[in-house]
Length: 429
Image (cartoon, rainbow, N blue to C red; front, side, top):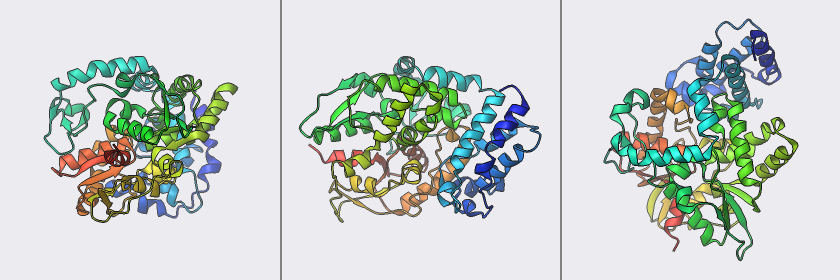
């Protein structure tokens, strides 16, 4: 894409999708970004109007457009509340891609998405080198969530509290796994995601423990790439396609019934976004994408619907509250299943928080570029968590877990953050 005319032409193709917006304002009531900023431009209808105007007028400042589009968590709250059913997230994703293609991808993002995340061996090497060295930069916060902070990197990371990298990544501990089918005959491809492989390895290991407890055989290649959602959210469809092709190569020879992930973002990407970009692939690759998409399941959904895991229904155990991850509930419609998995351990009883399905404020790269807003949104979630009196808050997405750990740690709260499957696995011998 080399000209403003090309950019205008592609934006005009969004007209049929944008025109459905009735400007009713229901998106305003549910938008976490508007709740934090109070600016109409941050609401879905404001961004849709921006896109519509760009499609018909001379584009004077595409960078400003990209910045405006970037002030969105892509949580899908607006889309879920939209009366005419405008596919707002699709429009925003495509608009980001168009404007990014016109401006050119930032060199740092290009290196991350198209080189680091698309080359598992390089990414794994970088994390293997970085894990032992993190003690030089990070210091423990002493909080219940086990977080660290990096004062020397505040200029880049902000004063955030985060989970440190695992001492050994999941793939380094287990290598490639290809187990023979067991008694019940079910075999799954386990897709741990980047955070499950390199940061929340205890969560990923809990998933493997649960699968083996139920005699489910596991196929897990050791050269899986990022699912592609970070690149796609940043407007880099080419980077996402490159990562997708690496994953297709790793998964194509596996004989499995389902592809199971413990990360809501990965599940939504495999199930919804991979097929949308399949037309940019070869016929063979497209067919494989469609097959994988049909087989993709969130692990909570898999445990409940395929293995019949049920809540123990205890009302006297330790209190756990549950946060609905946006990709899990709003994109995939999965809400009851994670609650059932968390309370399948009879040592826990569920207490619902207020606004359980309101975005926690992470939003992937949004957290990096708009940490002030991310933290403000997260504080509202933290207040709702603490108000329940729960000892644990559970979630079905490592990105949400990372955000919850940050805001709880920042407030010196003793609430621990766990994946729903971790809670279930605690009771298995």
